[in-house]
Length: 289
Image 1 (cartoon, rainbow, N blue to C red):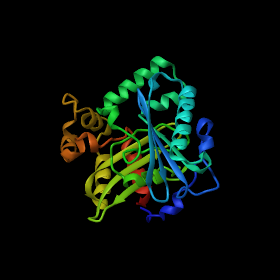
Image 2 (tube, one colour):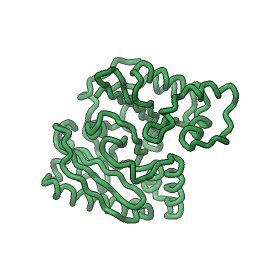
Image 3 (cartoon, one colour):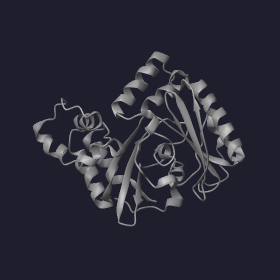
Image 4 (tube, one colour):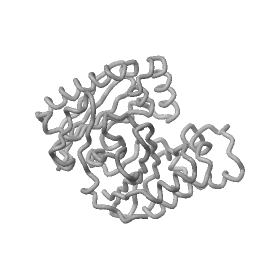
């Protein structure tokens, strides 16, 4: 595995498109200026604006609406209006906002793909049910993992660097040569670890619970790779006791601690092939925050 790189070297401004393009500036680094983190739910959108140098939360704005039924174009236009109002409330010029991030569920990617409304609603309901969490709980800010480029990815309730996550969201993961392993190092040597990887077509996230060391967490990720990911994913996330787990995998499934099954630190496992995920874990960059 490669040595951890300097955090400031992986921060970069993100080139977005369409409705979010005007909120980004390529002239300033992601460590200065202001950042906006937004979460789009089925019936509301909540946005927060941060000072990227001090990580101070300057303003929060929540709007209600039937966002699950909006087309991709209407959704982005609505979000642009919300960001306009938020910037005005925080007394921040839009030209100073150089990081804009949107998060939601994986079903939100369907909006970008332009699927029809019935498919959008079905996908959204299915994803929310699969993750087994109340959408009202998943807010942007310290509990969000997302990527720029106006892309919609899973919002995980995992503490990763506190509100400084707004800085981390500036990393252009989709454009990186290697996946990014974000490590939140605490004073007691424990870490919250999130592995994010994928392409512009699909992004996957794997979370390791808090309270384990970085070394142990990496071992946990590799150990999980050795099991049949599809079976264990459904068992952990949905709590479905009827899911059939092959006997040769049952001991590995039981080694996942109970804390991992709790909603606030669920281990979300990718459906990627075992060898592919192992390759990704062993070659990723490590960022300490």
